[in-house]
Image 1 (cartoon, protein in one colour):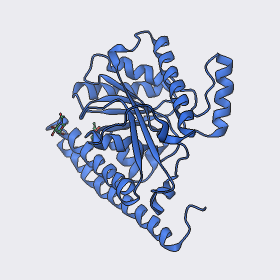
Image 2: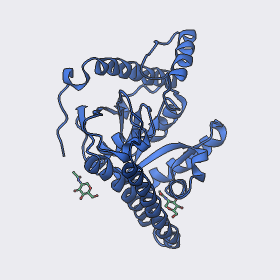
Image 3: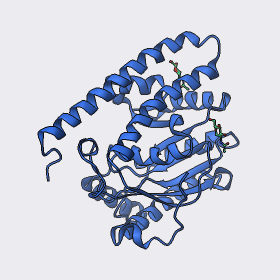
Length: 301
Ligand SMILES: *[C@@H]1O[C@H](CO)[C@@H](O)[C@H](O)[C@H]1NC(C)=O
Ligand SMILES: *[C@@H]1O[C@H](CO)[C@@H](O)[C@H](O)[C@H]1NC(C)=O
């Protein structure tokens, strides 16, 4: 079935885009004017920023969950309200963030999600500029240059004790079958486990994150977030109710940073091991989907 099958769906999609860009644009105006506050209170500015960004996310989440009636189920550890964390997730599609946000919105952290994003996204009208203003973590695969910027952003977060979910897609790129093959070849050369549903994670960013935040207000890692069998694309999300065609599942593990290995190499291995588990979990999901989950179902609210 093609993603858009009628004129009214096309109109729906176009109006959604116009609406979102319009809203992001007007919020931008307010955001830019918040620059004026900077000399007075940095922490207030951070709060204003993040609630503006959060408003856009909230509307998008409403469209996904309420209007398009996405069916989402949860399993794994209970996540407390308002808790800062480093969040690692797999990356299937542009629509992954809806699943991450479905957890964030239920834990009062939607405004505080900061993503690592590709540097070029900065130039995407309105959204990209908004992300830039909101201190998203832009990376361009040039570690030396990225590292300095990222550490500056992190040290601000620590200094102001900003509530934060650092969102990291550790695979570093979106999953495709081509990339999976390449990743499997590389894993075989390196002697790592061969996985079938996720790519081998890149460990350097994660290790840096954990090392930076040890002993700060960010005390947990949430692993395994965001699961997909077949992900809908962005257009599909906006044109028609998702209810019957898709089922979404989010599995979360909550791990205290002070229980992670101190040694960088061991920490990298620890991350790879999480992806091996995730891979097995996804294989389970493929055969029977959420019905055979032995883990306790996550309570709502
Ligand atoms: C979470 O933070 C909000 C303010 O953003 C506060 O009203 C609420 O009581 C907090 N919840 C918990 C469980 O700390
Ligand atoms: C908040 O926004 C200002 C500009 O409006 C930006 O300079 C600052 O880095 C942002 N900070 C955070 C934490 O979002």
